[in-house]
Amino acid sequence: MTQRIALKHKKLESWINKMARMCAPDHIVLINGSQKQKTSLEKEASRTGELIRLNQKKMPGCFLHRTAPNDVARTEGLTFICTKKKRTAGPINNWMSPRAAYKKAESIFKDSMKGRTMYVIPFSMGPTGSPFSKIGIELTDSIYVVLNMLIMTRAGEKVLKQLGTRGEFTKCLHGKAERDLAKRLILHFPEDNTIWSVGSGYGGNVLLGKKCLALRIASYMAAKEKWLAEHMLILGIERPGGQIQYLAGAFPSACGKTNLAMIVPPKSILKKGVKVWTVGDDIAWMRVDSDGSLWAINPEKGFFGVLPGTNSKTNPNAMATIKKNTIYTNVLLKPDKTVWWEDGEGKPPKNGIDWLGRKWKSGIRDEDGLPVKGANTNSRFTAPISQCPSASFRSEHHHGVPISAIVFGGRRARLAPLVSESFSWQHGVYLGATLVSERTAAQYGKLGEVRRDPMAMLPFCGYNMADYFTHWLKTGKRMARPPRIFYVNWFRKDSRGNFLWPGFGDNVRILEWILDRCNGKVGAVKTPLGYIPKYGDIDTDGIKIGERKWKELFSIDKKEWALEVGEQKKFFAKFGRRLPKEILKELRAFEERLKS
Ligand code: GTP
Ligand code: SPV
Ligand code: MN
Image 1 (cartoon, protein in one colour):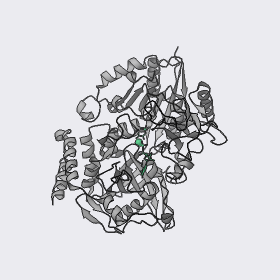
Image 2 (cartoon, protein in one colour):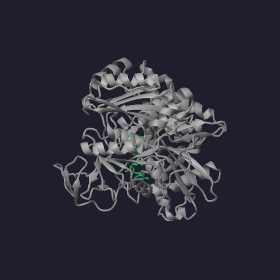
Image 3 (cartoon, helix red, strand yellow):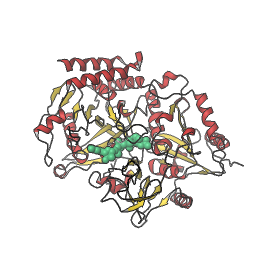
Image 4 (cartoon, helix red, strand yellow):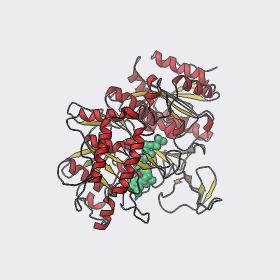
């Protein structure tokens, strides 16, 4: 007999019991947010093997989790926006009618929790009680999901209290089912404020507060309620004298948001008294306020960050953050029960257990002669932001931080210069809408393939992207002091395939220029793409960037750009007449500038 739950919020109670009747768990457990309950769940998961307790002396409170081999990244092909009309979802999203979607998923959810426990997680995206926050309730049969949600969101009884007896909430249902690709669906019903995810155990598919609620559902709400839900980091830069200005940055998955959000400036810049404050590394909710500026909160409370490439040289703040109370997913387990990943700390260990649970030795190769990786390319850490040495003191502020600049960036070996500034908000929206990036391991698909990823929201916009562009344009008109918009590319390469720009901590040099531009403190060179820095205006003290390299970093190949504009036109054509005319106007103006 399936257990039932009794709650003061009658709508919530009846929804949970209805879902329980479908999934048929043996037990229902309410997550209250207490340390005691968390500890007992950790024990339970360690007993069943869902989690491996790591070396508690060296890594207190840390655990390792391995997902199924077919379940290591977001499955965009199985992710759907289910609206009554297909055109509400638009030409980019996968679409299913709500009726068909519920029916299809129901057959997979049916009795899938037999012999299991259903956990009820009340969570708040944004500080509990803030008028800018949204509440969700996630039902899940995975302890891994519960423990991740406790790090990533404000979760527990206090949220239930906030919800009262009638509060609105997003209904989030997750079931592991059999973790079979043929029976996996990530479904969003923006018109019902509902998310159903079944058949996966991987982060972005199952931590429903994150991409599903805070981006796909929230972007749909935001368009209605006149705010922005974006795939953006938020960071503050403190200059000598104590003034802090904030930037928001949209980069596609695995293109450097986490790294930029917790950037540690190089010595020569630190010496000047520059300091960085981390507000968020993945999602920004932004509103126009009565002062005519844009204010942003990070709806999350933790990081779900990429591990490969993370070490104390590239990201010392991340390394400090993940020393304790961290969940590691799909990394190598060392004999001393600590962990390792490719391009991590120090030399590769001699041996260990790889992310698939197999014996692993440094230097081993597969049948094709390729090195066998110890950690999955999309292995990740889940850790509280509060453990980050640069964590902002404004994280719990219900109102967030004012945004001076918005930065768009892709991963492009060619074409895009290191940094350029848009001529206007409208031109900036065009730059965002034309964001292009090489595919990374954060989603299934061909690595390195170039794809158009407007505002880094391609996989996350919960409605018609043409309407999303219109919403961005309108938002610009509502601001007396809109942020300036920039476009950056840390990933440009020379003819031999080497990065032209050192990247990581040195990116702060570009952020300094961006803020100087916002403050009217520095000039620029006008190009067809936008304004670029004058040679000498970026602080290059301590790095080797000669005039030749500089020219290569900023070179504009007009012929190649003309081809690029052709690709943009093809992409925009998908939206038909719904595409705002301002976007095409900017495209034509750019074409003209390229010719002159
Ligand atoms: P999601 O969490 O998937 O949304 O990704 P993200 O945008 O937060 O990406 P992240 O900061 O984790 O970076 C992903 C990869 O890019 C890591 O392997 C980094 O080491 C690498 N990376 C980050 N910044 C730079 C940079 O400035 N230059 C170079 N060359 N690589 C970078
Ligand atoms: C991304 O892929 O953009 C991520 C990781 O931030 S996930 O939460 O899995 O989507
Ligand atoms: Mn992301």
